[in-house]
Length: 238
Image 1: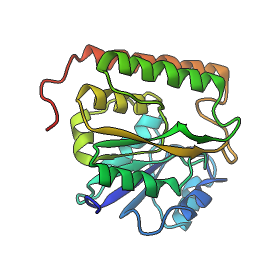
Image 2: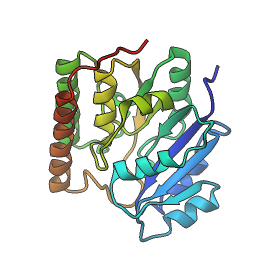
Image 3: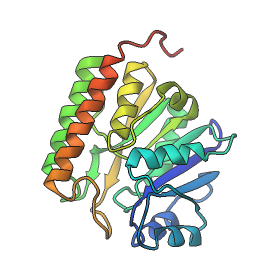
Image 4: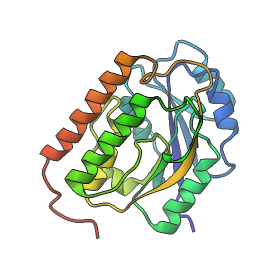
């Protein structure tokens, strides 16, 4: 049984080649609100998304986390949980139904779609991405004793959990900050296997270059350190 209305937030930067198909492949009637946050695109991303019925919000300030934060600010009051998905069709939109079913049935605060546990198309995850996932999830395990296998973009969490996390990252540390804060706050977390594909058109904002991957990796490790510096949560989740 659903725990309340769910919204979907899709950050998008120059994803006109894929955003329309991604929206078409969403499971029907799953989301009360579907938000595409146009993060300063120079192509027809916003136009294509609107044509598919999405609510489009413009956020010219660049940054994955910034786009996600802007989407959260536009949620309707009745929304109880939020899912996140990338716009490039690397995530499989059909996996959202399984993700939300696990979230509802397990009464989790946060559920991550794990590409490591699931089926990643050859070439969709670079060796540097796999190493970064391995290192970061093991740091989280060592510090907070919570097991994750991936930092994948496909995820769903309750609005209450989001409020407790007080996420601040405006860049590529957004996902790891969410997971580190969930571990630090001792929230109920889970993972399910999901499929992952090579992107359809466009260019990756993280793994497109070695420098971009390294820069994102440093930001991710800094985010884990920043969450660790906050110290233990004073009150466990009941």
